[in-house]
Image (cartoon, rainbow, N blue to C red; front, side, top):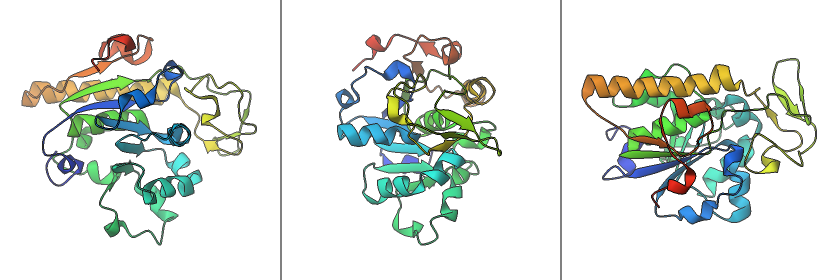
Length: 248
């Protein structure tokens, strides 16, 4: 990207580590990544970051339902300057009428990137927060490392019920949550979209791989992506290695 977007945060494109929230990261030490590398995290993982006192470089959340129902926590994340940059949906501004965006140059909006001719986002159709984070890394980075993207959701865990509008609500904080790398990722009262792992998440990763292939064929620009998770899911779209093979 050019100066019109988040790419201007760095003078030269760095390698980026994109963190999913899948159970495959349950025993991974996030703090081992340090703070010098460019890291990107998503959605409700900030609950674990707060617990271990470590935060990624960028925070990404493209889920309008989660943004709406966790808007106070996410706004505090921004105002406390826990990360260097934030990529979210403009939908949250409906709840932030007093939020002066001109005072927060570190906040970027997905809707703006999707109409930015210098951004890969102009090609996006389907997306989830994880694929948005990965595409953002492709925009600002020279090489992308993907960790913790499992896409093998249990669609309806015992601690959740479906509401009339189709969203789900957590009725009790899970003691064991099979979908995430820490068990209280979701807590009592949380409202969220049904994962739709195959229809939404997996499809968005497939489209991301197609976008990158198009960019390579059309513009001769290669953005290397490595997935460090041998689970079936996104391994079919990207070069895949074991997490033990991380080069750092």
